[in-house]
Image (spheres, helix red, strand yellow):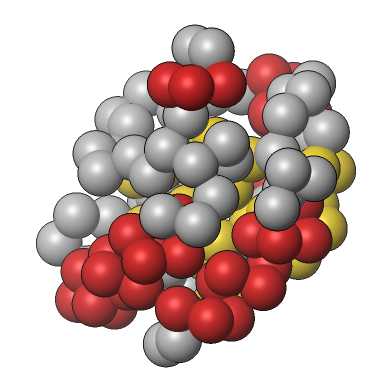
Length: 116
């Protein structure tokens, strides 16, 4: 998934999602963003995410296109979009559902980003 310098906010939803086993073995701070490109709440959150990720360039961002029957979202019990799952070494540390403030995203990022 790239070197640390390659990590930053992702702007494209992955149509092929990683497996839960792959997520559980991640060794770097990661945010999973579950949503869909046509979702109005997801679109509204993008500037907030961009602002927050600007302060945490070392955090991996995996944007997952979610929907009915998608196993990764179901394994995290995602019900509303966007749902942000903040992971430290593959373990959930925090979750934000439909965030409306960049500061709350920055605070959650700081909890998983040891470099901050």
